[in-house]
Image (cartoon, rainbow, N blue to C red; front, top):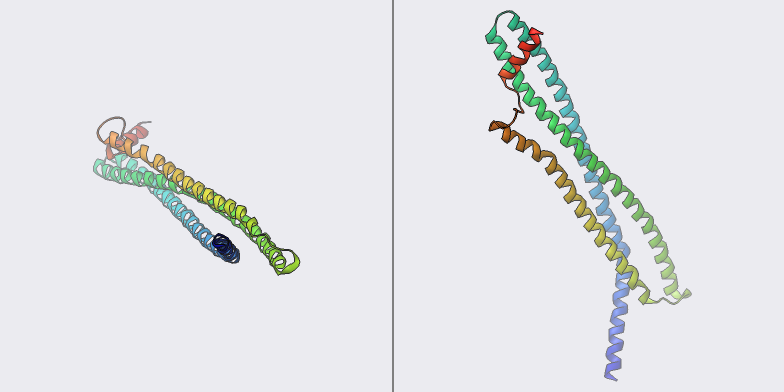
Length: 229
């Protein structure tokens, strides 16, 4: 008799737990979707910032290239006029501008890679949120049907909710793992994109291989060669 009562108590507790999970599932899903939508908005803002910064670097790059071209003309004229001192001063300014130009080009490349990644992430998130919204509408309709069944149209069977809940939990776990993997891969791509340039600069600074950044002497040599031609 005691064993029977204990079994009944455990069965009643399981039914109560299932009913509680059923009542809170849609509330939990609604909040999760609100959180997902907020995260999507943050990603969109990050994408907009990346695009704006890329455009800003593009304008800076165009301005620097224009200043380089102007100074090259003036430095050549100074060489023609026998003003080696002024030509060298202009050459140093050109070398500095070329370093700034190279930095802007590198920044634009990084912004371009980040923009592509963010666009892909935003598009994927929007598609998933739309799919979740469709699933939520279906879930609400199914919940309404179940409420009618619990009201007497058809007897409810509590055990039927176990497998769908387990499948939903597994699906959420897999999605989080895929998102984490995608984030790690994106960070690795950025590291790979920037590391070779840093190593090349270190080697060039020690005299191994050609210099990456031009100097005043390089600019003067180029201008003299252009002048001679």
